[in-house]
Structures are given as structure tokens and as C-alpha cells.
Image 1: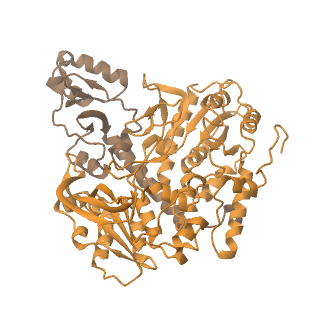
Image 2: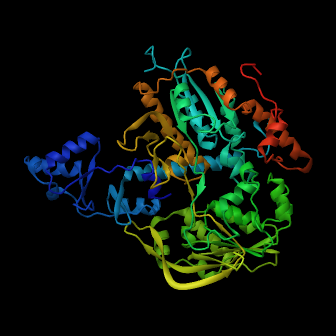
Image 3: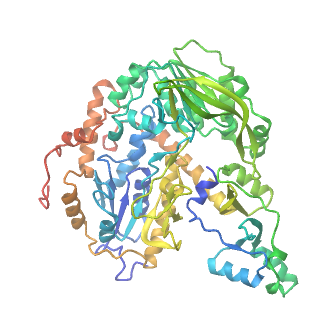
Length: 150
Length: 481
């Protein structure tokens, strides 16, 4: 299982915002798309940071002027970028270790998607569930005969 | 939610669903649909072949009958009186998506990944270079692949890839005729393999033992073949420093076990069996080399080394060291890929139908297409084992019921089982229903009994239809046959 298998069923849409936009703009995008974080991209559509609800809430607790601040001033800039072929065991491990909740995915220099830790956990859960199911079939079913004969 | 009078899902007005494709995913979708409490669902399942079960019949190796036994669960689904099977009915040629829209509230595409991924190297199309999937379909008796010819008079073959399909192909090539004779392998393939002169089969992975995609039961099995030794060059079985670090970091027991099995093979001394299955790692094909007649004579490989990406995943990078392997047959097994369905939006980047969690999306707006869904490999790409399609189907079915509750279904003009049957009869009088399939199944199974085989497969559509008496006889419309 790799990142591509998650992106394949995400519709290929990545919600982004520019670094110079205000937090007000960003919040309306979060609400509009019903997501918890936006990928911050520069003019060339390259990821430069991540802005999450959490970033906004933290600042809001101290400064109520947060709405007029820029995305750039609040975003997290320690980004780790994945590639579609990266396997989910490694990706999950790295996200947990480095406390990363969203991972932009680049393929040959272009942005192709964004996966969340939730996506990774769900994909891994489904993967293990599938293996268990198949193993149970192998252990419990009698091969060769149709059900009607048993 | 379904109490609203105009909403389908009641005894009087069942929710009518068309499932396109009768592989494991199609059946898991049907199973989840039937399980929903309080909603009455009717499922019509279509398949281009007369026989159901997709890759369980045509993909899973014939010497893996225990895995094929998953069909017992599908038979239970098909026993539901609200289930119908229309075999031999192809989307677009026999019925169109528009036909389905006229008869169903919801349509689910479960067509799988019907083509294989190419290596993209010179010589890939030389005689003797094949897609592993074609060989698999051939030995499994798939009617569309019975005319394929594989030159088994050569002594050495290479399988590119280290997934379960690759290992199936290598194992089948290494099985003795006696081992194969107790399986449901296609008779034609059995005869050809009986005459096979292939003695060395290389299984070639771009990365190392820790990254091989085959699962542990598969790799363990090749160590127990009756007449083939398994060989691994000791230096290639050793983990490189980055792989060792990755295995220690993730603490993945399945991976550690896999490496352990492979390393135990590296320590084995050949016992003089007549065939050899040789596992090779950290090699990537760069060219298939042919002779003047355009036949494969060798495979040029480049040695790779592993590099960690920022996420900690390991990728193979080519070095400047090359090696040439003399082989007369090459099977590529580097992945499957979905093919587009006419009139259904496709996501070319991943080779799947454009979708979000199983809802088909419009290409331009990325908004859901009303009433159309996708599940299985054509939804997420070709990954996982058979059972992986179960949670995948559950996710799609959850979207379907969510949309039903919101009133977002198609509004078919003729949501009527009889109308569909008439339409199918008219376009394809020789369609195969589920009871027909059960008869065909019984005939195949009884043909296998005298020789102790699970079944003897029919490998042509004509044979299948003749066996169950719908060969050249045309069933009349509305005759109630």
C-alpha cells in the first residue's frame, strides 16, 4: 500500500491558500470546503507551509486581531513532502514520530495531493482488516466444493 | 429516512442497484447493500463473461484453491432472492450506461484493473516478452486468452516484479506436472506446462527483500515446491543499512518475518531438484534484448541502491553497474491499471475512475455524479488482497445510503426487474443467469471428480453455453424460460 492508493479516491482536489492571504480568507476557505487545514502554496503551486485550525486557534487565544494577519505569519513551515510511491508503513511512522498531520504529495515537481494522518490510519486499518478476512477464509473454508455440497 | 413515501427502498418500491462487474468487490458491494436494515434493495450484477467471480476464477492461481474458496461467501450473497446475475453482458456493447440510468437508482462500477502496467523499456514487445497477467489469465482458462502462445521450450525465464502475481507466475512455472494435475488449471495450459523445458525462473525485484510486495505465505510456499529448489544470492538477501534501519524503526513483524524467510533460503544448499526458482533483488530491467528474429534472448539489468525519501520510504535508484541475464522468456508483473469506461470520468494519474470515497466525480466540477459509484481496484488502484475490497466496498455503500437518505439518487423511468430482463434478452439472448452458472459450475466440478481435481474448466464461451444448453438456442423474449 502506498500514497497513490489514498490519493486515487480523494478526487485529486487539494485545497490551497496563498501565503499573503489573510486568516479571514483562509477561515472562509476552511468552512467552504469543510476541511481542517489548508496547504499553503507559492505562485508556482509549490508547497511552502500548512495552515490548520489549530494554528489559528492557538494565536486567537493570545491575539484577537488574528483575522487580519497573513497566512504566512501563522503557517507551519516544517513540511515533509511525500511521493505517490511512498509506502504507508513508513509514511505513517514518520507522521506519528514528527507529529505531522498533513502531508503534501509531489510527483515529478508538481503537486498531486494531500494526505492526512487519518487517511493513512484508515488505509492501514482497511489493509489489515482485509488481510485478516482473507486469512480467515483460507483457514475456515473447504476448498473445491461449492457451498451447496457442504 | 426511508419513511418518505417517494423514496426508494421499500417493499413496494425497492432501491434498484446495478453492479457492473462480478469480482469479489461486486459481491462485497451486494453483501453490504443487502445488509442495510430498513432498506429493501434489489441488486442486478452484470459481467462481460458468462462466469462470475472475476479474478478469483481468472486470477488467483489454480494451486491456491483455499483462496478460491472465498466464492462460498459470494454464493450466499447470490442466494438472496433479490439478487440477479447477468453474465455475458458487457457494458457499452450490450447495455449502455444510459440503459442502466433508465432502470436503476444507483450504479456501482466494480470493473477492476483490466490492463497491466508496462515497464517502458526497449525490447518490451519482442516475441517472448509478455504481461504476466496474460499468462495468468491463460493458465486460469480465461476465454479471452486461450489463443495466447508462450514459448516454454526455452530453459530460462525472468519474471519482473516481486508481488503476489509475479510469485504466482514463477511458482506455476516451477511446479511439476504432477503438482499441477491436481489443480483446476486449464487443460490446455496443463498440457503445455507438462512439455515445458523451463528449468530456471528468476524473480527480479527493484528493491530489497524488506520491500518485496509478496506476502509471507506466498514466499514460504516457494520453499516447499516438490521439484524446484529456491535460491537467493546471499549478498542480495542481506539488508542494506537503510533497509535495516527502516525495519527496526517500523517494528513491522510481517516484514521481519519475510526477510527471515528469504535469508533462510540464501543459506540453503540446492538439493538437486530439476528446477530452480531464483530470487534476485536490487535489480531493475533496462532492456529486453532480442536476436535477429526478434526473439527474447536476454535481459539487461541495472543494479540499484536504496535511498530514503523524506517520509522514510525507500526508493530504488539506478547505479552504473549492469548485468545481463540470458533468458528466453520475460513476464512483466509491475502492476495493473484500470481502463476507462465510456461516458464515465477517469482519473488518468492513478488509472481509476475519478472518485471521492467511491462517489464518481464530474471531471470539470469535481462534484459527485448523481447515482454513480465505484468500488475496488477501479476506485483505489490495484492494491491489497481480496479481503481488502470488503472495507473498500463498505465505504462506497455507506456513501450510497447517505445519498439515498438525502434523496440524491437517479430517477429511473423503468425501475422494473422485468423491463431489464426484457432489455437484456433482446440485446443478448444468450445471457447467463445465476441458476445457469450454478449448473455450469456443477458440470465443471463433476468433470474434475474422476481425476481428483477441484473442477475442469470450460475455456471458451461457446463451450460454456453449449454445456448448459443455451448454445445456439435463442431464448425468446418474454417466454418465461
